[in-house]
Length: 282
Ligand SMILES: [Fe+2]
Image 1 (spheres, rainbow, N blue to C red):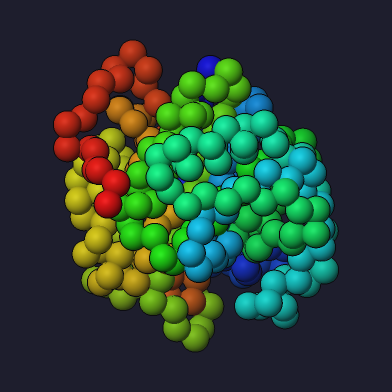
Image 2: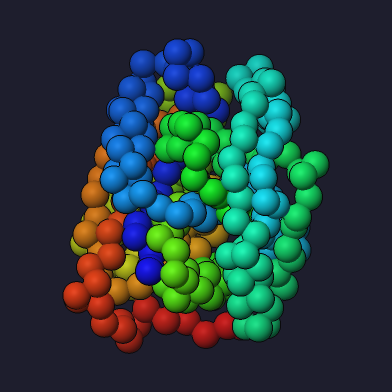
């Protein structure tokens, strides 16, 4: 089939337990429930998700474990996320295809098949909302510090190619914030400049102008301190291709970060290669 939907979602730890979430997260939480209903309609065979909190130093990891099962206490915030159980099926076959495609493109990709590996909260928190019944297979991907935005984009392009050629219905989700110069005080908004940069980036995504979003990303990532240096956005832009109908479900703060929920529905009939939406591996 193809990529049925792209997603950009937050994972702020204060929304892990909905009944304990502060009021300022209401818009984001409502947006997560709305997108969960979109996922229900799409009925994907698998969700591929990159998480800003699976931090790899050197290699790009692909979690090919056939069953993801564990108990998460987040080392960054054990007072907010403690003893959280999760269980989701995996997809070893599609994971293996992703790994092979990445290696073939000359990228340092490593397959992880390890039932003792415990997921990070950037993966667990959004999935608690998006797949509340734990009934959709998930493939988790790392962000990789040694990889530039360009390399991450190229890895995203390889992933996008495999997913589009797959006979499965796939959702690709990027879990991470936009501006991310964190401060103390959960209710703190990003600065006005950071909000302006976030808005411009969101505008490009809404207009399906992926080329401008990509051109903006390096300076934006630096100046707004975008989470993971913008790598999760570089991968999303690499995976997406052609025109999309973008839907916006909300924006909210968390300790000075800016978080958005958006979906990107490929417009298959209008697909065409965009000349400036391509970078070469470096
Ligand atoms: Fe985060």
